[in-house]
Amino acid sequence: MAAPGVEVPGELVAFAGELADAAGAVILRYWRKPIEVVSKMDAGRPVAESPVTAADRGAEEAMRALIAARYPAHAVVGEECGTTGDPDTAEWTWVLDPVDGTKSFITGKPLFGTLIALLRFKEPALGVIDQCVLKERWVGANGATTLNGAPARAARAPEVPLGEAMVYATTPEMFAPGFEARAFAGLRKRVKRTLYGCDCYAYALCASGFVGLVCEADLQPYDYLALVPVVAGAGGKITDWRGAPLGWGDASGGRVLAAATPKLHAAALAALAKPPRDDRLLVVAAAAALGALLGTLAARARR
Image 1 (tube, helix red, strand yellow):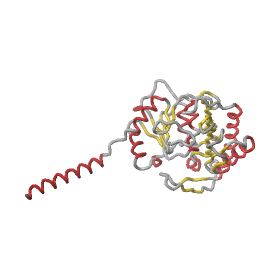
Image 2 (cartoon, rainbow, N blue to C red):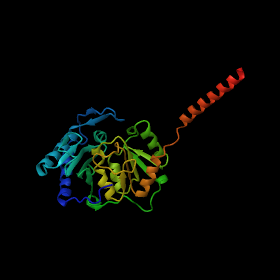
Image 3 (tube, one colour):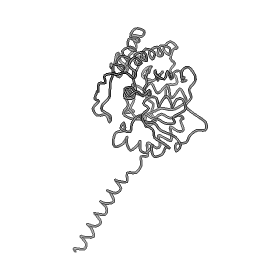
Image 4 (cartoon, rainbow, N blue to C red):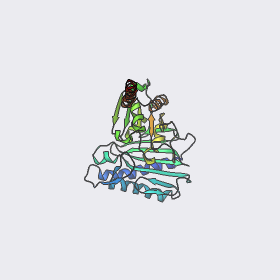
């Protein structure tokens, strides 16, 4: 959850809006127009290929230029342009994902977003989810979240139990075979419906009370740090899959769980911790036991 004691000065909240404006202006120049797409490979990840466009690079460069001019002492971490300064020691660090959901962007689907996080001593203090096409901007700071200036709340009455909740994830391919896939299957079997393909927009919808759960893996800090103040400020809860807080240098392994309410979050955590039984393993074990029994009986018959 967002650090409750971290106060963000109003000038920094306003500046985050300027950053979103600058990124949006670049992105809209390329929206639904022919654009070159370059693939970058991240070895060892469940989804190794990731597309990059001039919109990604240009939007991040525009935000970095503003930060360098206004707050040169602040550290900056970005998906496309790397790290400036030292996030481990800086008081303030900006973490930028200019186009979260590039695959949505290049296919003309307006569910991508610009993610802007501001950390204070490595703790998420401010978050922005900006959807420049739909002109929607969620801002989480100082314990509250707004959508275009109006209060946003994640919880709706009556509260939805886990069995009636819907869970979002960007793609089923983001869960690595083994632990992650089994754990997500445990959650998927206990909710009403599983939906895919919303990128960061799913977290924004969670903060506005339309989505009960978002469960994802294979994320990088620039993918999720901005989401923390937005979801938490709206009254929701967002942690890693163990229930631990998210921040710079955390031990989440890129696994994130967001929920509209703490109660729903607790139920989802429990589901992740109890993956369904793998009947194939039971069949193998039973076959092995039967084989051993038959071998014993055959040995006795030969005596």
